[in-house]
Structure formats: C-alpha cells, structure tokens
Image 1 (cartoon, rainbow, N blue to C red):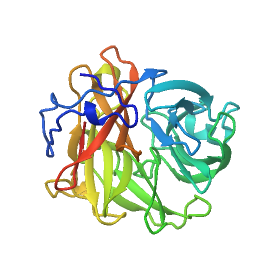
Image 2 (tube, rainbow, N blue to C red):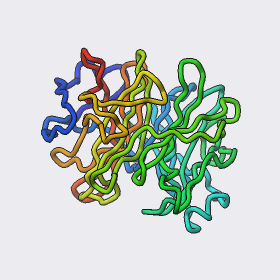
Image 3 (tube, helix red, strand yellow):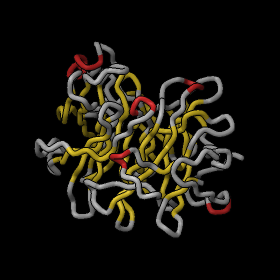
Image 4 (cartoon, rainbow, N blue to C red):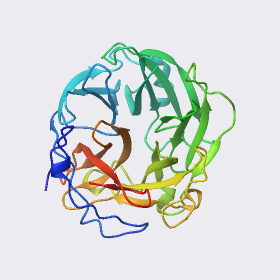
Amino acid sequence: MRRLLVAGVTGMLALTAVVYGAGSANAAAYPNPGVVTGSTGAHDPTMVKRPTGGYLLATTGDGITLKTSPNRTAFTDAGKAFPNGTPWASSYTGGSAHLWAPDVSYRNGKYWMYYSASTFESSKSAIFLATSTTGTSGSWTHVGKVIESTTTSGWNAIDPNLTVTPSGEWWLTFGSFWTGIKMVKLNASTGLRADSTLRAIAERFTNSKSVEAPFIHYRNGYYYLFMSFDFCCRGASSTYRTMVARSTSITGPYRDRAGTLATAGGGTEILAAHDGIRGPGHPAVFTDSDADVLVYHYYTSSGAARLGINLLGWDSSAWPYVY
C-alpha cells in the first residue's frame, strides 16, 4: 500500500503501527514509502521546511543536488548548491565534484548546510559548512572546514548532522565504520568547531563495523540517535536498515530499547527491507505541522536510488515507529 504524505491529510491514511524491538527480522510489515512524484531520485537526502513556504531537499551529488516541493509530495529539480565547483574540497574527493550527505537546517535567518567530501571506502575525508539566505542554487557561501579525518584517524569525517539543544548548544554528529559515530561541539555563532574534544557515541563490531549516517532528533526530554546499520550503495543488493537509540543527554550514553549501549553495538530496528524496498537508510527527521517526518533513501529492485518519506509515531514508552 502506498500512501499520500501531503501535510495535513495523513491522519486518514495512517497504517496500523507495528513496533519492533532490536534484532527483529520481521520487516514484512513495515510500511512502504509514502507517494512522492516528480524528481524523486535521491541519495542521502535531507529536508527542511522553508520559512517562505514549501520544502527544500538536498542530496548527495555533483555540487550537492537541490530539489524543492510545495507540499512534501511533488518534487522539482532546483539545480546545484555549488554550480561553480568546490575547489576547497577537491583534495578529499580526488578531484571529483561529487559531494556527500548534506545536512540542511534553517536557523537565525539563514540556511546552514554541513556536507562531506571523500571517496568510497576511504577515511581521508572532511566536513565543510556553507550558508545561504535563500537556499537556492549558487547562493551558498563557503564558510570553512569543520573537521577532517585521515587514513590513520581510526574514524571518518562524513555524514554530518547538526543538532541544537533546547539550551542553545550546537553539536555536530558524524561518522561511519572504523570506530563508529563521533560528535564534536560547535561554536553557535560561527557553526565551526568549538573545541578539540572528540566524543564517541556509537560503535558496531559486526558486519565490517557497519554503522553510519547519524541523525539526532530531540523530543520531550530524549535525544534520539537515528542511524544506519549494514551496507549502502550496492543498488538492489544494499542491506541498509534504520535503527534508533536514545539518551537524556546530547552526548550520551545512548541505549536501544533493550538497554544495550550504542557504543556496544546497540540499536533498535524501525525500518528495513520489505517487498521491493531495498536498503532503506540514511535517515533524517524534522518536525512538521502534522507530524514528525522521516526522510531517507532506498533502492528499487532495478537498483535506482529513490526518495523515501514516512511519518514517525511514538509509542507509550516514547520509542518511535514508522507509519
């Protein structure tokens, strides 16, 4: 069953929620992505509601691919964030224009975008920051490099996500594989790194230590760490799945529903492959007027990367489920 996700009409279309604990293999009952139309190719998507109305979507691509939507359902190509290239990132991409995993939010009257530059299976990577007052193609100003990793770092500076706490602290979460998910504190005025402390918040020890694409969402006293387990970027053979852990502190410790620490491989599965949906992962979450919205990518049976959008419900124990 496919469902329309136009803001304000989802209530009558919601599926019955089935909540799964950590390690659940019964993914068949997970919902399909909601209906999206138009330009729906996407990898590592992030979406923000625009103060002027509608939505801005950014995805991995040459110069960062931008799309817009008036209603969270119909999407239109909107060019590249950096149509004139990003020479400051070339030493990390091997000269390619391809940039990864943007994270876009709107704060203090402008858009903030963190994004990563790397090459596949390398930990020589960097996360950069750009800002824009409009979010449109070519309007993004390079602010600077936030953090970098090397081939000997033991961690990887990719897949950034900005979280601002209720008290106004700025934190950047990022990372994958190697020694897992890390976090650094940011300067709330500049958006750049505030100190030299590197905090570890999640690590996995199976399937090549495959954990990546962190996203932290605050709700009612909990910080929810959404992340992807297993393998992306293999087309229809991708095994990505979406997991969650939570903490009452932004810096952790994060635990899954069973109480296992995220630093000990913990994570509760909330979305996985089912029907023709392969490898749903790289989650991003934002709160809209009607619900909390989960944005992700998945692969079709032909191997095409597509935009996935669902809603998040919250059970009586304050754990999220996808519907």
